[in-house]
Length: 266
Image (cartoon, rainbow, N blue to C red):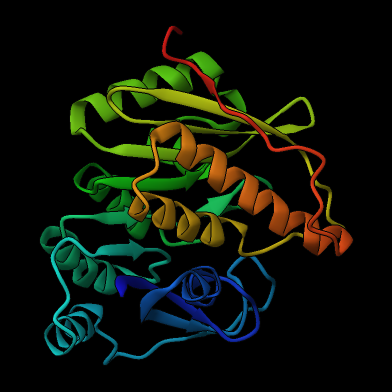
């Protein structure tokens, strides 16, 4: 059985963080190892969310216990998500330095909400993003990592930054939910290829939480399946759109599958 370690928030009242990853990966046949970075009553973007801190919580210690007990490999995919403070970040950094295949989701904020973590943790993500093999970030997070204003970040700048970043660090980046003319773009890039895909915008009456965490879990799944870069983008986008559509209309029926286009020549 394939192993995946998920190190992110455990949320009591929302399908986000570890709960979101488990909902995607357990049904796809993975042995899922969940390590909490914090316990929350709801998503951090929700007003009055209670954060339950535990001074004895140490992801590095928990990870090593799981790794030794269940004989995990250095090549097993390891998802890193929401990190509440610098102490936990330093613990996670040891895991990033050890594991060969880390999928980093630098959970920091979103358009319309802004930054909802401490700046020292955001700066931690800026430092470690170059060390991981795979990145999955929403548009706000990618903009923040590149010191860009999310409202004045042109498509040409995004493409140039992605190409430069992936060529320099030999990794792969998935950017989610770039708004454009009432549609959303997802882009994937590595040192060889860059692709974009476009979907209609689904308008929810209330903000839908967990789509990013589920997308990252799907990203890990299709990496494990050794999909091509283009296939990863198409499969993640179509799967998450189907999930969102079901939550909006109670129907999974999609009129068509969305196809990715190459941006290699731009």
